[in-house]
Image (cartoon, one colour):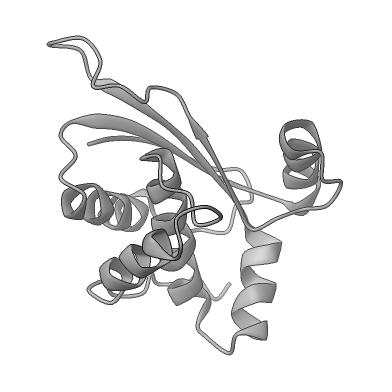
Length: 147
């Protein structure tokens, strides 16, 4: 997997930790070589994206933007898409759910990756969220920077 990572929120999460989670989901789902983008943003940027793409004028936790739903051309890396995570919402959800921020981040990365693969928890009767729980249970939390 090729990962394009951008920590626009400057929270200090490492690209290697993000790659570990995304790669674990891709492996569990039997996906071959792909390119995935992960961007960590502030609430303002996420609100703009959510308004533009979903018509909801508020920040949300994670958005996925699939690019290539097909296997692509032979010999060309499939561009799976981008995952955008809102750091302030992530931190608040972790507090609300009484879990470590690193655990919540693993959950959102898995969630976003499954969406890139075409899964939809709003229409699948719980299958996506069950997959997500199984995969996340095998992963360690991401170390969340304290400073």
